[in-house]
Image (tube, rainbow, N blue to C red; front, side):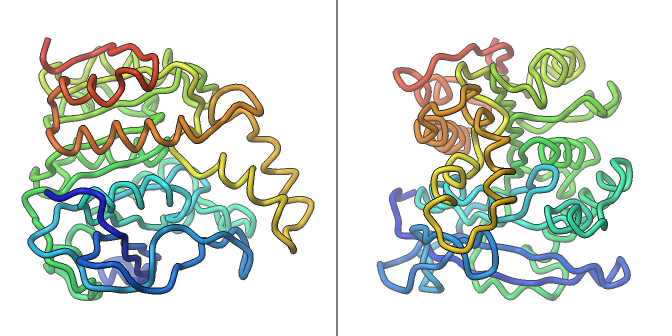
Length: 325
């Protein structure tokens, strides 16, 4: 697969007709056959944001393209991993990120948030619906891309990691998922029985300085029940809970943009330490190592050699579980 493509991007609103017309937003990033197009904005607020590398529309790279489905964390949105999603699209993947209504920032602000048990059930159903839309089993998502349905991966952050691992434990994508990637995962609610049912190659990436979903409570206990032949778990030093997200970029960018309310800036400042674990430390190396690690894993899921290669010289880490041991 040729790497370092330019990136196209498209936004969609889809409906799950099996669940009383539940609507959710979907963002698609994909490798382009050639350069061109107008850069698209990532909005912090309506009309206030920054431009990424992705452009509107454009012809996709030829051939059947592998897919990564992305599930956001608690109170997140489909757009808060733009750097990671663009990086994976540059490497030749179609990256499809969805909103989970009932657990986005807007839902919480408007008092429309759901409880945790409802949240996980809705999220698993969202993931299954999106999968069926992507492969054409349901109508309602005209993505116009040629997809390699034998290489569909699921990636989640925090509560989104819980969602994709739970989906896999229930036979997500009819058991055909190529791999699952859980970044700074929230796994406390998963039962031993559910963890034991995960028979898909699984990459767990934890942050040593994560105070929201600590390694000690979310990764190490889960490893006691996950089938060892399928799981690789990495702990990255100097990484906090938002190491894979755009939070570092938001904190840097928001104060420079006109029209950002003071309460938004105050909220962002509460997350100053969440990328690296220490407020003010450079966040770009942390974001870059997540992109490199995930891309390496996607190229050969379960191969710890590529994991080590992506990390050596770029980060200090511990592999606390390995499918090749």
